[in-house]
Image (cartoon, rainbow, N blue to C red; front, side, top):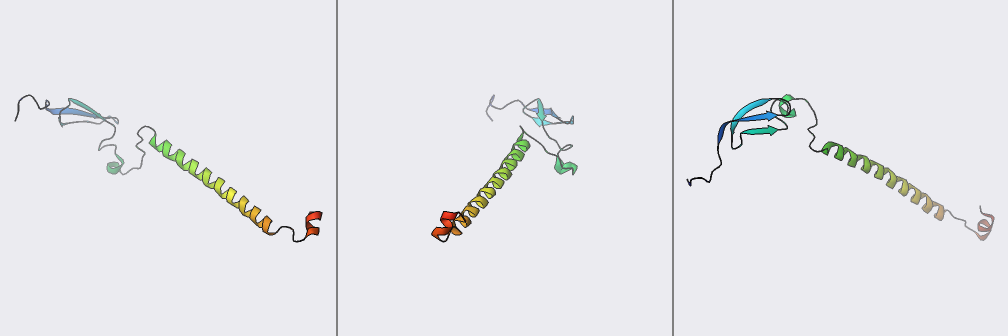
Length: 102
């Protein structure tokens, strides 16, 4: 091995989770902070919870809401166009109906 090219190794690096859990492991950093660990991760706890990084859950829910609103608007526009098409097809059949507005 070449000398002075490898980072310093810390055999008892301390890992701290946002839930308060701490443990030691080997690392090139002396202290590590993590957002989720085996004590609070939904896979290990069996509980469903959202692990939200930078508002991703809210962003997704907002997109879903916009999509539903747009789908309702498109359906309304299609219904309106269909109604206009039917009205054009059922328009006055004779000159008399046109003049009387029936």
